Length: 237
Ligand code: ADE
Image (cartoon, rainbow, N blue to C red; front, side, top):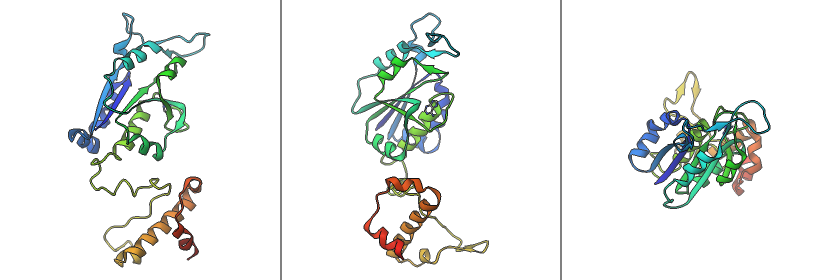
């Protein structure tokens, strides 16, 4: 079972993890979500978690001690634990990272909020990760997105075994077009080959469409694509 542990000042923000597929995954003990409000670890009477920046300037800075104490207080890990700090300065999160994390036993997310955090908090994390090149009000939404993408890779979370493997980005390409009934809709027909029942032709068509889509929409992805020998023949056709 994958354990997601989240250090946050706003545990109520994580309500969406209690819906739909992730709700079912938790009920089936495929994953667990533990929310820790690190304000509970604040030392002062008034439970302060932030303070003014040394050297002056606008905004408040998260203090290191409450987060440090919260990490110290975690039960010893049952297996491989990774501590993640959410920050726009981190490495940008990608499917590759979701796959890597899905093999661990516990992910601990430290969610900053407000303007920033004391530099010494960085020392508590194994990795700094960003959701993308934009700034959020806090790490909470970023953590939720990452948890969702890791959770769906865990064995048993998605219905069909194959469905996570075939998605967009799972092989560094965009997914091929999908169709269901009816065979003609608003004058638009389903590609002939998909109705043929010819498995090898369908595979070839799908691979070619994946390559075509990636070329047209996200050529930057080709920098990391692992091409197959048969791709060359496909593209020559
Ligand atoms: N906190 C604020 N902005 C963020 C981002 N882009 N990714 C992760 N955490 C953040």
